[in-house]
Structures are given as structure tokens and as C-alpha cells.
Image (cartoon, rainbow, N blue to C red):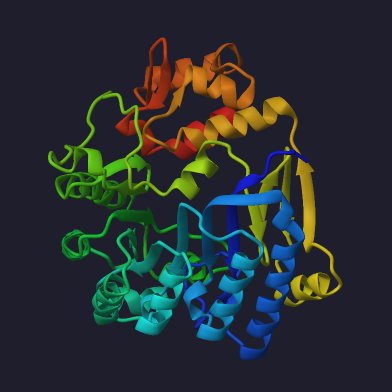
Length: 397
């Protein structure tokens, strides 16, 4: 284990009001007794790792973290204060618009949370129902106003596109309304059909077809509209405002334009993932990477609680990657970002050079028009970002 404390902390809250039709993350319908047991187990897990972490970023994801009640949040916030883990420069909590109240928002803000990621997904009532979301479009606008009233000045809006039945007209309307909210950050993901989800089963039952051309057009619309609204794309699906360039709205990145900086309102916690940084993962199913070892907690809330109640970490698996394999993984994840990799930065982070280890892959991506390189930097082009998963596979072989 490294002697320097880890500076990023992820906490998984596995409870939801109901499971969404597309969701493959570990989550389950909420149960009052189990939630309380989970919170007590989480407190114990925080105590076990407290001497190894000094968070600069904290991220509570789910599931639906905002489903926890006021007393449960009070206990978690007090535990973090007691252990000296509060006060992170960026502290994000994911919220469902149906579970935001002014009291809860004020409690979180007073406790040190300074960034909220709101799972909107769509502003079309029929599509929300198709996705299995429990909130309405009106709840989105109400919750956004509540969060502003509580003092949050760093809000992310999460959207999905290529939803079955979603037309370009509906997507444009959703984008227009979402951008008009004036959030500091926007995340938008294409629907993925994961096995063992209702949406996957409906696809294979031929209830609808996937239109890849429409999905590509929707992505291009997303990039263009977000840029026109003052957002800078810094990762395939993530867009942030940048106070330094607030006076001159950005234009869409085209051709092989170089992007060599990350906007000020980018999610620092996620940037740490994409740059190969260390992080602790707490809660059922949470993954972590510390001291060269990748860990994963049990994807079973009752088992997670039982292990912590015995005073043990709830780690199911531990994997130590060989140095070159870890470098390849870091390269692959980093290419999701518009800045790609500066050669010196990659060498400092991994101990390896992009060349000669991946020379053939770099040449192939460049020849396709998916990437560009110069003496200092290798990065995907706007066209290549659309196929970043394929590019990543080349580096991971």
C-alpha cells in the first residue's frame, strides 16, 4: 500500500425507489430496515479506511443517494467530519428529482457537499415512463430550483439519447430545455443495452430497432448545441463550463483541432478515473484502485453489511495488474478525454512511453482519421471520440 493518502473517495448507495429498465448497475428497491443497516455498515467501512484517505474529491453514486433520509445523511456527514474526511474541494452527490427536498438539500450543502448530479435522463413524459423513471418533467424544474435555493452553484444535468421512441425533434426539445436550466455541467450518454435488463429483453423481442445513424446524428446535435450554450466538451459524454472563457462561448471542435486543457467546471473526481489515479470505493459492488491493486466489494448488500459488522472489509476480489497492462488501461481510459495524452504526462503517470509500445495502434488510428499526434500529444479527433471504445480495445489487446 502507498504511504501517501489516497485523495479520491467513491461511495456506492445501492437503493432506488424502483429499478430503471436500462440499469445494469448494482441497485435494489429501497427497504427501510436494510437501508439503516447499510448506513451503519458504511460508517464502519469509513472508519476502516480513514487513515489511508484524505479526500480532495468525494462522489456518492448509486442507485439513488438522495433516497437516504435526513437522519441517515446526518450520521454519514457527522462520521466524515469525525474522521477528518470532510471538506473535499469537490463533493458530489447524485440525486433523483423525485427525492430532492429543501431540507435535505440544505443539510447536504451545510455538510460540505458542493456539487449535485441530477439524473434527468429525459424531459419527455412518455420516454421517462419507458425508462422506468419515477420522476416527472415538472419535478426536474422544481428540484433544480430547490438546489439553487439551498446554495448549490455547481450542478450537473444527466441526459440520455437514442432512447427507443425518441425522435430528433424530441431530443432537440429536451436539449433546449435542459440547456436553458443554466447548469454548470452536462453529461449525456447513449442508451446501452445491457444483458439482464428489461430494455435489453425488449430489444431482443424485436419490440423496437436500434437506429445507429439517428444515434450518431443525436450525438452531433448534442456536441453542437452544448458548445453554442457555452459548454466545453472534455470527455466523450461530458461537457462543462469554464469560468476562464465565460466571455467567449466555445465553438464545436472540428477536424483535428487540438484541445489541451480541461474546463474549470469539469468533474474532477471522474477526471481522476480517466487519468489513472487512485481511489477508494466503498459500499456494495464499489470498485477501488489503491497501491496498484484493483478491488471490488461484494455485490450483495446483506453480505456487505455482514462483513462490516464483523469488522472486516467487504472486498470480494483483488487484482494486481502487471505494470504494462496497467499502463495500457490508463492509456485507453485517458483517450476518452478530448485532451488525450501529453507524452510527458503519460510517462510520469505510468512509467511507459506511448511509443514504441503502441506504435502500430497509434499509426492505425491516425490513418483512419480517428486520432492525431505530434511531438508532444496523442489524442482522438472528434470523429475518433465517437468510436473511443474501439480505440480503447486496440490499446488493451
